[in-house]
Length: 291
Image (cartoon, rainbow, N blue to C red):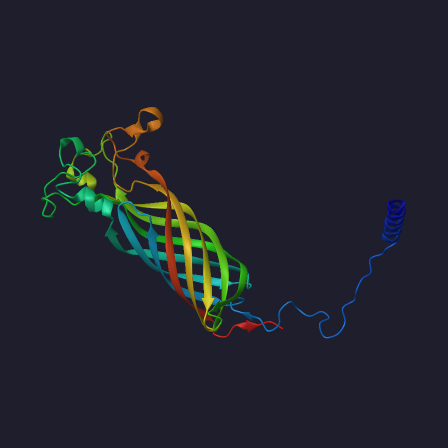
């Protein structure tokens, strides 16, 4: 009997709740007082809006096979608003060094043999250089000479960075995308009809070329002061080039075997990567402040 009474009472309660819910109406709450019409944040420093930024940069290539490069340059941005900017980044491949792989290939004892069998791919001529008197392998590896990249920058996030809850620095995260003109030097064409033989010593000389490639980057900018900033970014610069100067493609199935010639068929695609650090200077010196 008790169970029956409880079930009846529970059913009545559920029916009452449903009937009440069916007659409920949404009520619009009008915000009054000092917060009415107030922005999400007051007195926000707009470090980018309406300002021109000039930032010297140093870029360090990553995961290089034969030659590392440090590019010195600058970025120029005009910030239309606090979340979008247009500009250009340019840099010169000022400093290069061999990777451990290039050093091993160049080793006269344990490295690549210098003989008739390898004459197409490695310069076997005697010279006034060390390494057993042969021309250094480094002299035939491709160089990254310069990059000029117009780009658009989006700034989707900004906030403050706290260090040990003692030091607070304004910061933002940005994404940049655009196109790039890339100046390189790589081994010139050889071996075809009317061209120099690929076994000739001077066939290993580098020639200048220009590549057109997409480029994109992501990075953080930190604002320790009103007129200067510090930045770090990761950039990708994908394009195909012959980094070692080898004859590696051109014949056989899908052109995957050497053909006795060095040309554009021997270029392979690479997702070239680099890390950039920068120090930016903004004009005018004082940022705008929101309401």
